[in-house]
Image: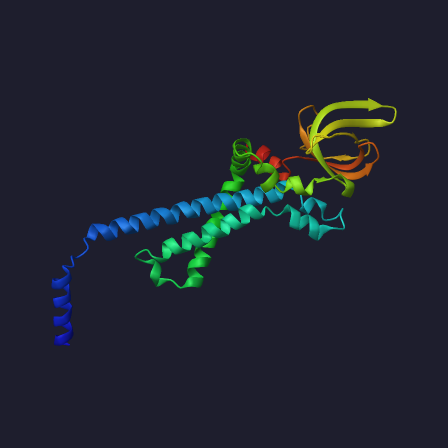
Length: 243
C-alpha cells in the first residue's frame, strides 16, 4: 500500500499535476443544470407543438366517418416534433446524469422523470395556447416549414379521398343551395357545396378564413361537403376558452 502511495506521489511530482479548484466543479454543475433545464423546456415546447398539430388535424374527429383511420393517424402525427422531443429527452437525461446527484438514479428512473417533466410542462404550455403562436411564427419565418412539418397539409390535401382545405375567397347562394369558393393548399380554386354540411361552431364562413372540409369530390373542381371544420381544429376552440 505504501509503495502504491509513493508511486502516486512520484507521478504527481513528475507530471506536475495540479488539483482542480472547487470553482471548476461548481461551474461544471451550473452548466450541466442549465443545459438540463433548457432541454426540458425545449422538449416541453416540442411536446406542446406535437399535441397542437395533431389536434389541429382533427384526426379523432374523423374516427367515425372514415375507413382509412390508420392512414389518417399516420399522416396526422407531426413526426418532426416527435423526433425532436425524444432528442431533447435524451439530451436532458445525459445532462442530468452527469450532475453531482444524477448518478444516484438509475437509467430507467432518470428517463421516466425527464419524460414526465416534459409531458407535464408541455401540456401546460399547450393549455395556455402558446403552440398556436409558436407554430405561426415558425411558419412565417421558415420557408416550407408548414408544408413539411404541419400534418394538416398531408391529411387535408387529398380531395380525391374526401379531404379538402383552403382559404375562403367568396360565398354565394343560389336555388341549388349554399356555396363557398376556396383556394386550396395548392392554389387551385374549388366550389364547395355546404348546403347540407355540418358547420362546426368555431368555423367563420367569411372571406379570408381557412377551413377544412370532409365530403366528396366531383368534376370541374366541385366538392360537396358533409362536414366543415376550422383550420385550427380543436386548438382554436382552446384559444376561445382561454382568451
